[in-house]
Length: 263
Length: 65
Image (cartoon, rainbow over all chains, first blue to last red):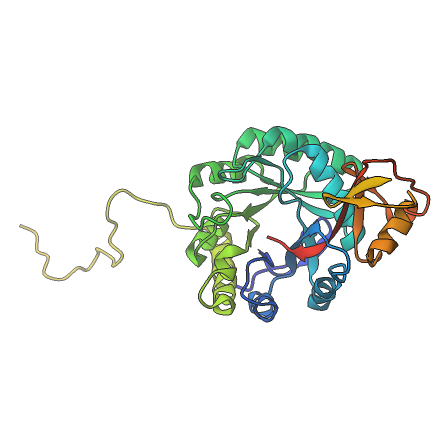
């Protein structure tokens, strides 16, 4: 079955893969990976710009040429105030209300700070932003984000850049069950296509990944592999998986089995 | 007067934000600015007067995950 269209914050999308643009071996490889992934949404960031470096315009031109939705992030922010300021700067530069809201509470595993995240989310929504919050898989935090008006929530699979996959599938399945109308995008921790497929099989609406593609030996081929896995996982979710059994169940009919005689 | 631009001390003659950005060589359509960690919209740069020791952040687009 062809994966059907879906939407986030009113934008119609056909791909369920959001692709990061960092850590690739070259700009040419990013561009090829974007094409191979068939993504509709690419992430981007802001950093201090030294004078007379061209103001980042070469990269800005590159982004425009991709003709994808841009999802700027607030990576590196540790407080709600920092994240709110960076979001406002992003809106001016990238001309979009979308913001991937990251507020880091622990530098060791880049774990989101739920308290600052909720504060920033409330303020940014009041300022007209469409917030894509990067959060842990905590059910109560995600519920609060939904109550504030987030149409999309992005729980982690595992810490950013680890490639460990889904370390708490139970928590992620619980989020799906408890927040049935929220667009859930698994963000961070994906290392393999099977991880991405697992998230989609759980009923997630999409997957955001970066390092798994950027740091593959062949990023372009891995981008293609991720796209296929995400489409397969989504189709499996829509198809409805068989029930799991503790005991063997013969596939071939028992009736008419040869060499059987009543004793 | 001294202000800080992206963490570096800079001596400026005028306190006007728009003039400081131009004098430092920024292409103003490509950057976004905060002063003392608060966003300063582009349309207000002309009227914004900086004070001594103000902290200016000038940011531009980069790759991101």
